[in-house]
Length: 89
Image (cartoon, rainbow, N blue to C red):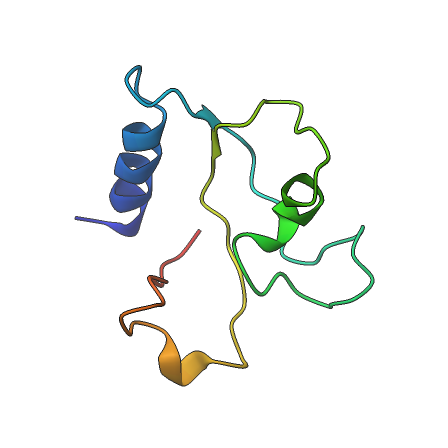
């Protein structure tokens, strides 16, 4: 199975009629609206304003596949708490 197929299966799972998530676009790898960081370092990072209470235009149930650059905890990726996988976008 290719990375693209894995990503699509993930999106299909959450956006199914039973789960009802809306697929949202990926944020850029270099965030223009977050001066606190150079690169997106977590898939949740572009969603911080919505986690802090702002209303997302697509609602409360959203899903995406977000590219990010991990440097601080690269040795921990793949352990029981980090479910990051690597692939080409």
